[in-house]
Length: 344
Ligand code: SF4
Image 1 (cartoon, rainbow, N blue to C red):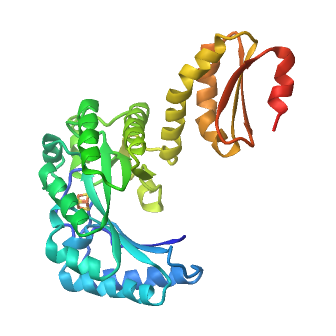
Image 2: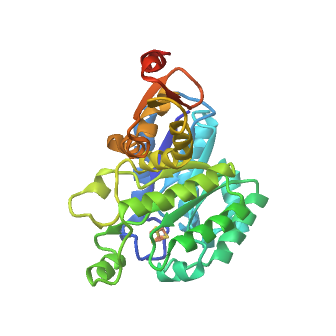
Image 3: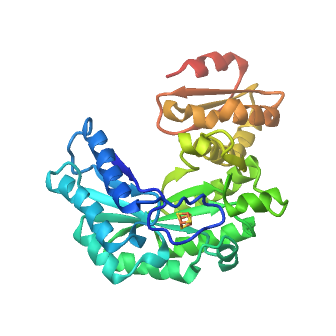
């Protein structure tokens, strides 16, 4: 399966959320269609046709675009659908730009998944971020999308102005009630040129530390995954524009935020089991895990290993990735350690 990404940066967005570096693009109409064509053609050089493939309009608020422009853009993906190069289309938009007329159009053009920029379902947080919509509008948009048979994605943030962990947890509960299909989780960053940058420079806003952002994002990740919501991204894509020197003024940026969050979740999940194993007879705690998980269990720069090693000291702690399907934690004697650690 391949995704053909088509970026329409900030097109269709009538708002200025405090954290977004929205740019006014002159000649937007021509630029959006021409740029979309170019992007598609570039991908067509290597994408193999499959009904599993998807075209994805990213950036901006698709359904906020002028109707004629939406049709022009969708005509590009119609061609891919008719040639069976792709099987479906997805896009992202704002919750307050969802109505019957717009959804009729999307349904007629093979759109199957609509992602909503939700960020929070706490009205006071939405207001402080100047999102320009309410939690109620999100609920109505999700209900309408579902009634039209669309899959629904939600994009959520942690670390917004006025948003504490309790507010994040309350949002998660409300999101679970909406039963989305997929979600993205973004820790908020202070980006140059945004209204938030001014507040930050005036000492009126303090972003989350990386550690706290990982803790909160991990909570959202775990709760949504447990409910069957697929997490399709954690953290902003570390592309050239985002990472340009001086662009991120402050905030919990890490190019592998998703990996940090998953490692944190392994730490939470495995710590009681490791402590239990450490109470058994033996000189070493051995964690055997599927090879594909080894780096996540280990944590960035061995962070989890160092953490657990302190907990089980003076016993040794050893992690080994082998061909098994489930993580196994055992306490072994020095005599058995070599044999246990070499099993595969
Ligand atoms: S709605 Fe989206 S694109 Fe528009 S300003 Fe807010 S974050 Fe940026």
